[in-house]
Length: 373
Image 1: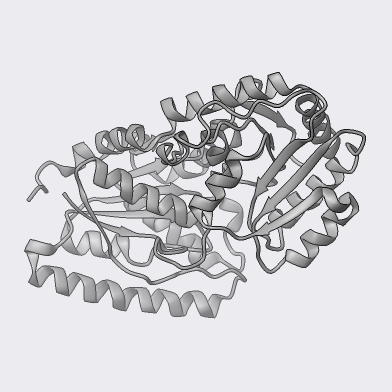
Image 2 (image 1 turned 45 degrees about the vertical axis):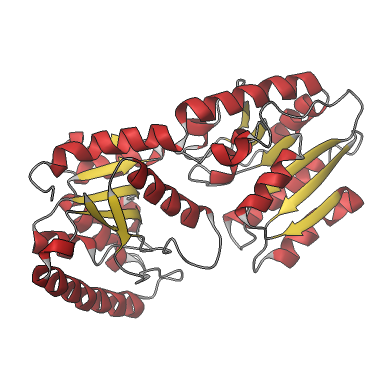
């Protein structure tokens, strides 16, 4: 089936790497594996990071114009028209101005993956985007939920609660299989190699980096090093937050996906406080590499990190608890190895692309009857 794919926050071919871009690409890969024909419908970005109503109105106008052009083009060429519209990542800062209009104009199903909605945004600086998300969700034939924390906000907007379909977050586990199948064996007393992968930007990411620095600052009696993979506008602030750790910290800056996989393979433990994290693709990629994870239990992090099985979870924002969890694993190489092996096995079983492809195909199947070419 031909599927129009759209990512209003960041298109999957955007030059700047991020978890959002990676997930969009993974959805396309899963759709292809399921036998469908996904194609990017538009590069229009509806993202308003600051909350400017005039910008949201302008983006809405651009969206209406773009939707009109798509409808006219596909009505004229039905043989190339999509049979389903698929929007990835919908929230108040990046609403979908295209999908609802195009799907209605062509009479095709409208599906959204990873949508969030919070009533508290009504009347605020993103009110236009907030209302657009509500309208899109009311129109949606299916909402695929990657983050269990989003469910309660989305359900009241759906005509039928059965339209909400959970899907476990997923990665391409094969990318990591040959690199780190069972984890690196480390002896007691050996310097443990910690790694973290995250963009450096103000807000929650910077807060997480600061908590990471504060926690590690209480563990200087143990032998460890930290590699930080990532970059962004808050690089100087991140460096300042980690400066008290001295030469134990090495900055690798931003790396490509294959390079990140290689660096994960050389580590012993993944550490990230995950302040207000949706679920964290880097946490999933680390586990796919056979790494145990220490993370804050924000949002949907608990959906992908099994506490005590594939890693350790701590209360969000609690630096002391985070430090205690790190200490537990830093002094226990065999425990790290066991958690890492369990993490790799869990990803292959529950969070791999083939499993996601089967689940997505099952979700779409009832909508595709009567729309096949």
